[in-house]
Amino acid sequence: MPAERASTAPRRRVLILGAAGRDFHDFNVVFRDAPAYEVVGFTAAQIPNIAGRTYPPQLAGPLYPAGIPILPQKGWEDLVRTRGVDEVVFAYSDVSHLDVMHVASRAVAAGADFRLLGAGATMLTASRPVVSICAVRTGCGKSPLARFVAGVFRAAGLRVAVVRHPMPYGDLVEQAVQRFATLEDLERADCTIEEREEYEPHIAAGDLVFAGVDYERILRAAESEADIILWDGGNNDLPFFRPDLEIVLADPHRPGHETTYFPGEANLVRADVVVLTKVDTADREDVRDVRENVRLVNPRATVVEMAMPLRADDEQTVRGKRVLVIEDGPTVTHGGMGYGAGLLAARRFGAAALVDPRPYAVGSIKPVFEAYPQLGPVLPAMGYGDEQIADLEATIEAVPCDLVVVASPVDLRRLLRLSKPAVRVSYEVEERGEPKLSPLLREFAARVKTRA
Image 1 (spheres, rainbow, N blue to C red):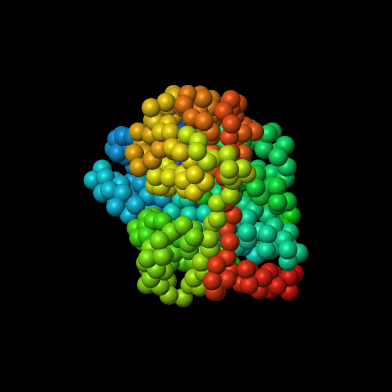
Image 2: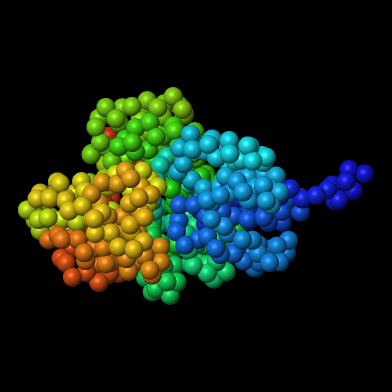
C-alpha cells in the first residue's frame, strides 16, 4: 500500500537557483532520475548570458523530454507562486550567510520550502584517489596552489588529471564532457577568457584537464587516464568528488570571511589542511586573526602558510607610467575584492598613476562596475562571450594610459588586439614557515603509489 501511494503521489515541484555550475550538478546527481521530483526551472545568477536557454533533454534525461528552462533570477518568487513550486534549492556559491538567509526568507514567504544540498548527497565517489583544492572565498589563490600540488604529484611520478569546476557557457550538449590536452583543444572548444585562465597553466605544465556538465561521466573519463584526480574548485564551492585529502585556502586579506560566506565555511569545517595564502602581502595581525578563526572552527586541520610573490615580465617598464590594471575577473567581481595582484604589482613596481577605467567602460563592461561597486580603479578581465571580449578590448583602447598591466592568469596579449604596450603580472605560491604542505603531499603520493 505505501508503494502504491508513493507511485500516485504528485511530484514535488522544484526550482533550482544557480549559476550554470553547481545547479546543473545538483540536478544531475539528485533530481534527474528521481520520479518523486519535477524540476520546473533553473534560474541564472552571477554569470551573464545564461538565462533564456534550456538545459537540454539529452542531459536532463527521460523525465524531461523537453529539457528544463533556464530563467532570469530576477522575480524568482513569482515563479514559485505561478508554477506551484514546493521547494527552492539554493545551488550557487560565494554568497554571504546573510544573503543566503534573505533568499531563504523570500522562499518561505512565497510558500516554498528552502533547501541546501549537502556533501553526502552531491559528492561522487572515485575509483582513484582524489585531492581537492577549495577555498573560503573566490580569489584566495586556488589556481596557483592547484598548479603547485599537481607539480608535487608529477615529480612523484603520478599521472595527474585536473578536473575543473564547471564553466559551461556554450553548447551544453557539446560541453557535457570536455578533455583538454593542448592549447589547440582550447581553440576548438572556443573557450572563454575565464576558462582559459584556469585551463592553460595546467596544460602548459603537462597535465590533462577535464571539465563540462555531467561530472559522473567526466570523473570516469579522468579515472581512465590518471593515477590521481585533482579537483580544482571554483569560487568557494564544495568539491563534486569525495576527497581523500581536502585542502582549503583562506585569504588574510579578507579576515572574517572564512566564517561568514556560504559554502566557504562548510569547506573550512571539512578541511584536512588549511592554507593561509598571500602572507607576504597581508598584515600579520590579519594572518593571526584568520589562523585563530580556523582553530576555533576546525581544530583538527593542519594549518600552513604560503606566500604569493608577484612577478612581471618587465618590471622596469612599469616605473613612472600611467597604467591601466586588468585583474582576474572572478576575484574582483563576486569574490568581493576591490583589487588584485595587478594593482599591488603596479604600486610595487613604481607606476606613476593608476588610470581609472570606469569612465571609459564600453557596452557590457559598464554594468559590471554597477553590479560590483567595491571595485577600485581596475578593470576585471571579463570575457564570457565574443561580445563581452570585444567590449573589454574597446574599453582598454579607450583608457588614456601609457601601459596596460595584465594580471589575468591567461596572457590577454594573445587573445586581444591591443595597440598599447602591455606587461604581464604572474604569481605562484611559495611555502613559508612550518609545517609545509609539500611533505604532506609527498607522503600522500607515496601511499597512492603503494596502493597501485
